[in-house]
Structures are given as structure tokens and as C-alpha cells.
Image (tube, rainbow, N blue to C red; front, side, top):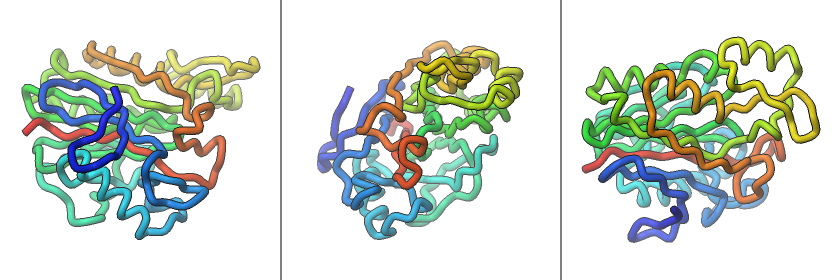
Length: 251
């Protein structure tokens, strides 16, 4: 479902994670960044004009209905818990998963091929945004995020998950040794590209890990960033922006 929040024309691919939860994935559309970051680049570390990124982030905060917290993502498994909004434009530190327990703060992760994962237990008022790249998935970032949510009162039986746009298995070519290394930890990632070479299917790996943690309500958008020009893709164009998965607890 696509939609814009009253007061902004920002198109966001919305996902249903429970009553009152505000959740979705941005695209390149409707921002103010100039090429090659056009247009809704939300990443501050890719070389874009900071003023433009700030304006884009303001638009996303209006859509979310609350200040949006971002981390400095390092392809790890650290989780940061938030109950209050961070300072304007401030990173909450190095982390690859953010958990919010307050409708006064939305949480977001930035991607351009890695897997953005949004999680919510609407009844408990606990949500999470997860950056699941190859290394983070192998190191357990998804399990860490779910575990942190449970510590804050979420029930895995109630958690809903949305796996956002990312590079598809048929597009993500990797050396055979790297494929073996990741697949030993998450077997479901083993894949083959459309042209017959070793690959990793990160969305399939995320899906499998979520289900092993007990999360059953899992949806996948199935959009391939490498093949979809509406989305940023680092593999397609290394000098590019970042889109976001963002989620806010119910008020």
C-alpha cells in the first residue's frame, strides 16, 4: 500500500504492522537532493549536500508523525533502545537495530541493497527497525532485535515483521567461498544468480531467521534494488543515496 501522511506529499510504501503502528519504506521519489543522489536521499555519509539531506529527513519525520532516530550503521548486531527522541540530526551511536517504546520517537534504518526489516508488537507498543546486511545477518542482528523487543514486553507470537526492498538473490553475486561462509550460519541464504553464479539471498535468510525466533507474521515486499530504478542500489551505482525503513509505535 502506498500513501502519504496528511501534511506531506511524501510517497511511502506502507506496511501493516498492527493497529496504530506507522511503518513503511521510502523510495527515491519526492526529495530535494540533486543527482546522483536524486531525490529523497536520507543518508548523511554518502557525499550529498547536508542541507538537502536535512530537508529530506524533515519530510520523513512529518510522514512518521514523530522525530526519527538514526544510527551509525556498522554491519554488526548491536541494538539501541529509545524512549525519547534524540537531538535534532544526531545519531544515536553505532548500531544496526533500533527499538522504540514510545510514539514520540520513530526509528529508521538506511539501505541501498541491504535488507531493511521492520518489526512491531502493537499491543505492547514496541517496534524495531533492523539493518540486515550480509555481515549483520550472519552475526545475529535480527535475533538481537527480536530479543530486545521481548525484553521490553513484546510477545513473539504478536510481533509482525515486514522485510523491505533489497538486492535479490538472483542479483547478488558473491564468491563461492563467501557464499559458503554465510550459508553455514544461515543456510537459506544460498542462492544462484540469474546468470548461474554463486549468490546470497539475504531476504530469504532474514525470513528464515525471523521464523526460527518465533515470529510467524512475516511479509516480504520482494522488490529488487539492483533491478528497480525507483530505489537506491549501491551495487548498481556506488555513488548513490540511501532509502529508509521507518516505524513508530502506536500513540
